[in-house]
Image (cartoon, rainbow, N blue to C red; front, top):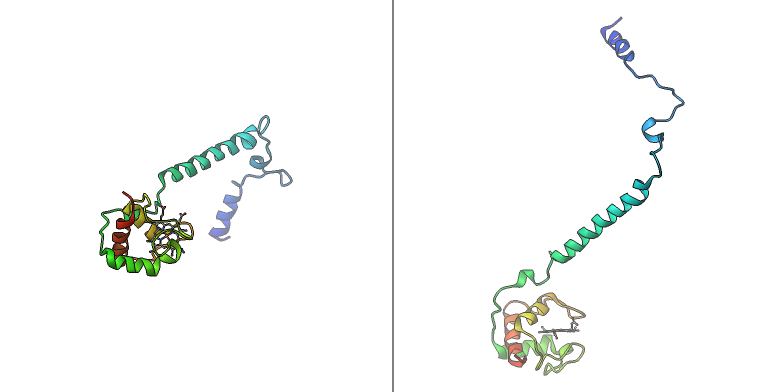
Length: 149
Ligand code: HEC
């Protein structure tokens, strides 16, 4: 007899012998009493945990659209800005910014910061990033001349 065989025989005696037709105890032993925990408590706890985390995340608002664009708004050249406005914005906001598909901007109570955020992020049917960089600064300078402070 090889050493391996002997070792195997030796181990065999330690194997727990069970009734082969019996069910696994851990699975088949019913919980004591009505399964309240599984049917009521667990779903309630899950619901509370999930809704709390969703609510917390929503409150934290981690992906604030304007978060990255905060900072001083630099105003460019208002005259150039008006040309860019005619080219890029007038189709929706009107040649005199009197409104159209988009709301009237002339005389509107909007801050330049809010306008910048709107241009950077878009909103409603207005696409984001129609103008960027210097052209955006120019448009903002133009808007600053037509907004009501
Ligand atoms: C495709 C049409 C469209 C174009 C082009 C467009 N806008 Fe708009 N804009 C809109 C709409 C629609 C709204 C209203 C958005 C909303 O309800 O959230 C809006 C809103 C705004 C607002 C905010 C108004 C407010 O009352 O808060 C500003 C500022 C603005 N646009 C500036 C611009 C500028 C500057 C440009 C050009 C670079 C431009 N828009 C181009 C459609 C347009």
